[in-house]
Amino acid sequence: MNERLNWLALADKFANEGDPRAMRACARELFEMNKNKADGPAIMAEAALYLGKLDEAETLARAALELEKNHLRGRLILGAIYAEKFELKEELKIFQGVANEARRAITTFDKFLKSNQRKFAFNRHEKTKEDVELQKQTETEILLMQNILFKALSWMSNGLYLAGDPETAAEALCEASELTDNNERAAELYGKHLFLRNYRELAPSFSKELASKYQDFFGEITPYSYEKSKRTLNKKLRIGYISPDFRQHAVANFILPFLRDFDSEKFSVTCYQTGKTDAVTDRLKRYHVNWKDLNGRAARTASRLIAEDHLDILIDLSGHSQGSCLPIMAYKPAPVQISAIGYTATTGLKAMDFFLSDTFCLPGVELNNGFTEKILRLKHCHLCYAPGVVREMPAAGIQAPVLKNDYVTYGSFNNFAKVSDEVLYLWRAILEQMPDSILVIKNKICSIPAGREILIERLKKMTFPIDRVELRPYSPDYLEQYREIDVALDTFPYNGGLTTCEALYMGVPVVTLRGKSHGARYGASILTNADVGELIAQNPMEYVKKAVQLGKRKELVAGYHAGLREHLLTSALMDSRQYMKEIEECYREAWRIYCETPQRKKIRRFNNEE
Image 1 (spheres, rainbow, N blue to C red):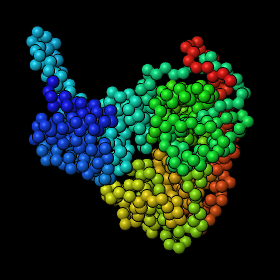
Image 2 (image 1 turned 180 degrees about the vertical axis):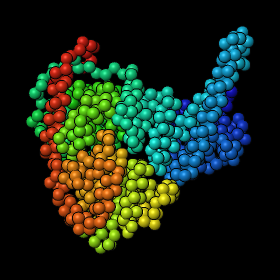
Image 3 (image 1 turned 180 degrees about the horizontal axis):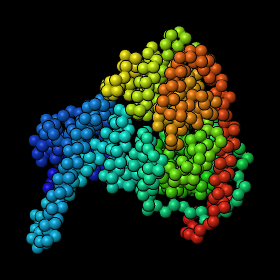
Image 4 (image 1 turned 120 degrees about the vertical axis):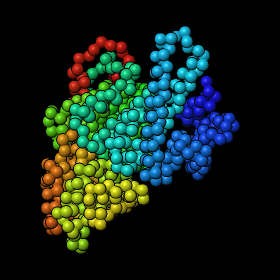
């Protein structure tokens, strides 16, 4: 086969194995082969990128493009450099161009391959060594283009998400998952794709259909079986919680009740930490539960270590979010497995038995068709807000800003990927009906000059009153800045979770829209259990109406700011003891269902006796 293709294929192999120094050796061979070709410096640039040498990577990528201005790998690496610098517009432009050209090249090579295969099928005696060599070269060219397309799509998805386009990011991840023969990586990308699909309206039945395909990545796994286990209904249950987020993370604001307020006479608790640790982890470890560090462990190994602890129930707190533990759950390391709090939709995983929700997010069986799991419903919110573990909470703003400003300040501190066009249209309608008001948008996209440009361009296309919109970058004092917001506006269909809780805790009323899916009812569940259900809108028109009416009543806004925190502290949303009582009832119900399910004759893989 062509020597150049050999070295390029070998460089890609080393890249996939995480060996950039070996990539450099391939690059030197390519450079010596032809100093006027871009392959050598482009591979060297990619290796430098992986080694974190960004200046060197950029110099080499530009050198490659001076030799061949349209060289795909050179452009790919330059796009990655722009991504590291958060130059979103340039990054996305390059990645999109590289992806399109790689697709066209793959199509061309594939057509050539198929046409020759048909020809040789009819004339096998005419196939020469040269023909065989040409076929191998073409197949290698396709693989090289697929690798470039894979990287362009994977890297582009991050930029698209940051730029507030989760739909296109999800499509890119789904396509990328089909381009790799690494099953573990493919599952990870598809899981991320599922996570991003929640950011826009999706019929529950279609969401379930998409999620069910996730199971295909684990078809060759033989899960642990517990048919020999002793099923004692009223025994002390061994509970496990698994998560990558026992650290500074949004989920950590809801974990404390599980560790502090459980009934230690009826339950024992073990936490399985799969992510990095920090000061928040240390604070959580002060509570008297067992801890096991599984960070860096392969899914198979982690599942075995968990199974050896003979748990009764294992609760996953991550779902398809970053650092997902679902590949571990697929091995079924516990006889009963539950998805809870960290994800808003079905996992699609057969090994997941139950999904924890409440009567507000899933009020009736008609919405259950969006889940592959059985539903466990709490009477109150399936989240219990327990601040103070991640950071010390500042005092709430007692005085509403409108009292001193004489105009209303609306605000959203949500992840901007959650802000759909439908949300923006309603925000614009609110500002139109409140001509003296302003809107504060604060999030990470506003921290990046290119991100601000993208956001402003999007607002202009929607004829938004730009002069009445204040874009604020993310900052560590974001909680204190709620003192400058009169009314917070929730996003939909992906409602705020922690963001809504924090706004309420800082004394700011939040207007939300009750949607049609589980994730689109988070806001309604939180506000109902915070005992401020009057802020829940049943349709888009009412969302605008409530925000406007609230803004016109200065004394009402002032009343929320003066008393909302104290009100919240005594509400069901923060009643951790009642919450854990309901949670433990759900655990007992799940265990009862398991105990009463007829045992099937199958291979005995694990004994879960006392």
